[in-house]
Length: 173
Image (cartoon, rainbow, N blue to C red; front, side, top):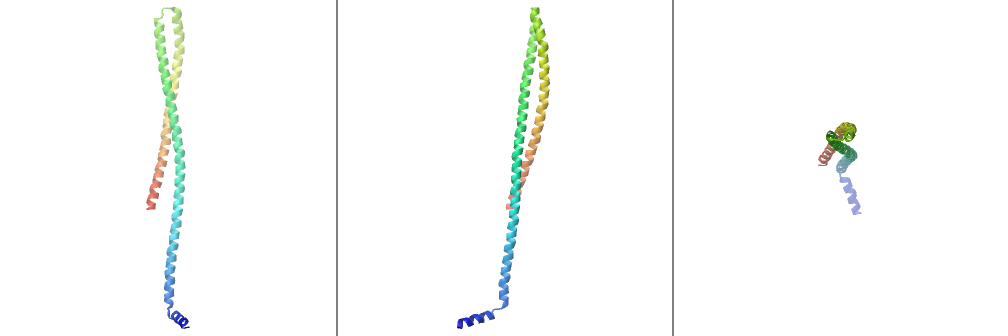
């Protein structure tokens, strides 16, 4: 009994201010925890958005790299076709020169007539190949221009990804 009296007496003597201080300290702690949870939630949202943006940029970057590779193939194909056509033009021009030389040096009229008949065919083929060469030069030029445009888009996406990376790096510190 002596103990219970002591307990009741100590409760009565304890001031209500003491209870208030404990409650106030608990409330401040809870407020600080609540603010920290809210900040963490906000940070998680920002991180999720940044991750989504990075993923979108990576997909766009992959697509653009494929577009650059296709443009490069078109340039390579145009250059190859142009190179082949130029070789054919040289070969036909050489054939025409040889045929003209043989025509002028031919002693037999039948042989001379044969060379005369061949020359217009060779010259027509040369003209056709020269037209093809001009078209292929235009195609090569257009393909190179497309490649530069696709490469510029790729560079812009890479720059965007670099900026995102730097902003994430600075926000993590």
